[in-house]
Image 1: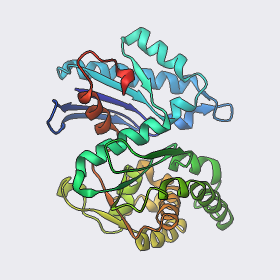
Image 2: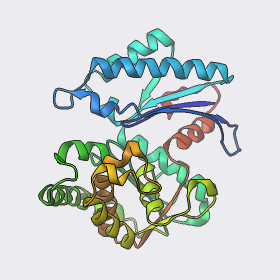
Image 3: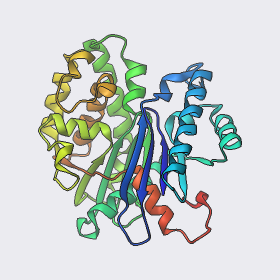
Length: 314
């Protein structure tokens, strides 16, 4: 089974061996940093022709790779950048016509629910009430629940890429810009804390996404070479400390920190500001990093569906 994830930063084809009742096992990966959100024109309303052409080219490659790997079914979905673009559906319709590939646009709430499913399956029922946080390129997803479907799920326009483009004009940003972004982020998150905490405190607070993984890594968590079963946590104290340290560094110097991806270095400060606000406002001492996220959630949900049931049921 193939999963084609069209995100705000990267576009990723993941081929997995998957069957009902079994753990999806990665078999092949093809990824590029397309940065679609940076191709949004007219105040972020339309995806540029260059962005549309680059997306079409990558999807063409992905379809060929999927065929070469003997993929039985490809699940393709798009998130914030395509969702925000007025011409997003038009571009996806052209891809469908040319490549016979249906690409589903997920809402922010869909992202939160499907990621929550992946986290629940990873940690199991013994983890009790889960609270999930995921910082993407375009949005922050938050969900809480005791079952496989969350009691509450919300998506906020607080992605690391979106905030970097919209709030920072210098590298490193000025103290005034950082203060303004911090105030904006905390106001947005604070307005949703009550809708989550009214269900009770979590037994297990969890984070997914590249941003949280990189923050945990630079704060001392195990590297990816130690495998997915190593316990990795990000503490409130560590993210607060690293937010201040990252604020003083230009992107070129952030790239030199072990564990920081060069492609994401420019966005890491904004992501850290969101992470620090999240841990503080939800009064969480730490978050455990989950290796599964949205892509695994999409596959798990598809395997739960009845044979022949449409992908719209995701």
